[in-house]
Amino acid sequence: MPAKPTPPRKKPAKGDLRGVLAWHVRTLRVEQGWSQEALAHACELDRTYVSAIERSVWNVSLSNIERLANALGVEAWELLKPIP
Image (cartoon, rainbow, N blue to C red; front, side, top):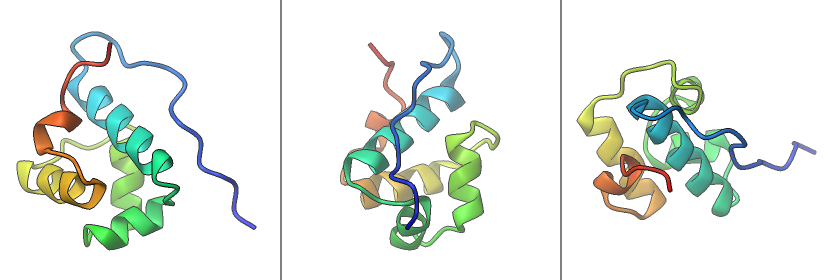
């Protein structure tokens, strides 16, 4: 049985937009109980790409931010809003 997904533990540094995106994507994915593979399938992206996004490795295009947001049921801007 695969491990249960866990929310992010460490908040990204102030001004780290890739980190903010990673935080929101992982948090929303975990809230929905999805694996990275399930999210990747829902937005027609590769699982390794979703993993790289959650690790803040990639600069993500606006088109892919929109795909992620649609799959997660939020507006695209919500994935980039500052973390309180």
